[in-house]
Amino acid sequence: MKLADYKATLSFSNGSPAVDMPIYQGNIGPDVIDIRKLYAQTGKFTYDPGFLSTAACQSTITYIDGDKGELLYRGYPIEQLATNCDFLETCHLLLYGDLPDAAKKKDFTSRVTNHTMVNEQMQFFLRGFRRDAHPMAIMTGLVGALSAFYHDSTDVHNAEHRDISAIRLIAKMPTLVAMAYKYSVGQPFIYPKNDLSYAGNFMHMMFATPCEEYKVNPVIERAMDRIFILHADHEQNASTSTVRLCGSSGTNPFAAIAAGVACLWGPAHGGANEACLEMLEDIQRMGGVSKVGEFMEKVKDKNSGVKLMGFGHRVYKNYDPRAKLMQETCNEVLTALGLENDPLFKLAKQLEKIALEDDYFVQRKLYPNVDFYSGIVQRAIGIPVKLFTGIFALARTVGWIAQLNEMIGDPEYKIGRPRQLFTGSVKRDVMPIAKR
Image (tube, rainbow, N blue to C red; front, side):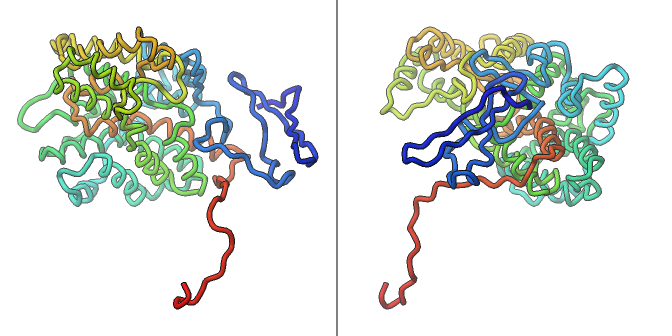
């Protein structure tokens, strides 16, 4: 970051002296006011619940322009990456800062492929869970447990340890997600196959059984790969901020990523695509497409308590660029599987049409986001709704690791320690129990 040629001056109406604060400029995006010395100079904190106007770090990884509907990984538009690259190329980009050439791609792919198996004892750990446990409950436990099995790479301050733990996590997450799924349906675990692609291997571990050969549909394989790319990173969102905060204590990378998985589980974050599909199924039970208009009127009624899931975004005030790509993928998948007349997809199209034409939604910039279509795609592929967020965690792992590594390498990083506006009781004395 570079110092701007102007500064901010904070003045007070109570006669306290004004304070000058430096302003820094990023390469793109808003300038930031440096308030690190504010408390020392004024005895005051800032108050910003939800970090609506606070930059908690400097980063070179991902940039979002919410007004333009633009998402860049290391400067590359998400549309170009999703069209011209595969997920492992995107992983290399996020981790190391550049897209690999043919030799680097071969080497990186080989490193990931050779770490896809997990310790056999992980199976016994998994069997401690109930069969009907939510996959995210299982994933939180499994990812955290990796530090007990791979304790030779748990020093977050060791660059070599961070690199090998990054490869291990990217490689093993598909295996763990597939194991969680197989366990829930009572099927045997399927080992990874090194001759398959990253997405193809995941699909094979998910849907193959020992009793017959399973061939990965190339359209589904590409769709899964695109889902991974679109979810790989998204700047300083809740789960990424959780990973950074957790990692700032110096904890091991596996524990920090487990914290990210736990945060992602929330319905306002990674669980949004699950909630979106449930909404579509509710409308279908109400009567399908014929009830869409009635449903949207309820959404506009503040007193109805009905929410429109899959539309709008905290950052995007324009069409989510990932949603456009996911819509294309949705069309491709449903066509390949002969599901063009899928009732939920028809519902989704009708919802989108109303939202893009109705002044109520247009004025509020409630455009479809990536969750709107990704749930439909995964459902068509055969992935159960409860596993949607697990797949999100699988894809986001590389972004979490890249962000964690960047923070550890930042000479300005300190353990995260937010301050507060205290509104509780002032100091008081404990009375004897007879007088309380």
